[in-house]
Length: 153
Length: 84
Image 1 (cartoon, rainbow over the protein chains, first blue to last red):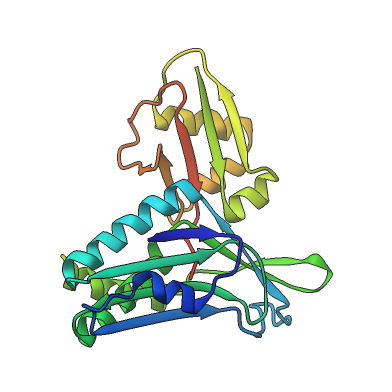
Image 2: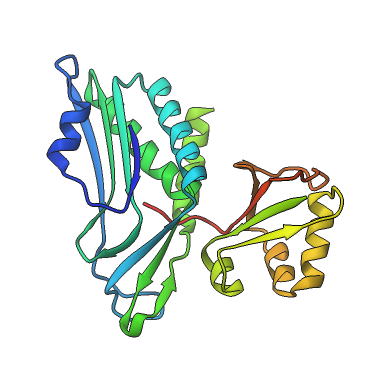
């Protein structure tokens, strides 16, 4: 299941969606909005997430499919929020299910790393006076993705 | 024929709009469209010179500048993504 939504989500409900008696392991990644300083050293009040939804859904389906095949997952769900989010709110949830933990953990990491580099979402920090500051892609995230390219291809 | 241009992130902010609908009298390539847009607004020069910006035609990344554009096509301008 893949979902892009402007509403929050419930962790237990999302777990129930992927759970099954045949699974022996689940891995979760939950990203939240943290209190931090922006690149211009201003205090962040929240974030705004922009998305090219049609493209992002296509990209997420491809990533999910790769993970299901490579790590023999029994299920996988990806939920990503869009719009305005306050500090502490949930941004993204990746859930992977498999027979054993190693596959679930590795696949979950692959999905969130891929999402950060490949999927059409853009984050802005919300500052005082309705000011928005664009968040830049991190070179570290790009370097990490190269590692996955070697594993997947 | 008409083509929709979709702008995201800093490109949307800089152009002060999220999309454009452009009318063309004849079929043109992506390369020719780039030249036309630069003549219309110099901001496009900056966009096309930025190697980190990707261009998607109907949800597929453009890998050949000579690709021709057709009526109803959607061309999206994508700066590096920062979700998650």
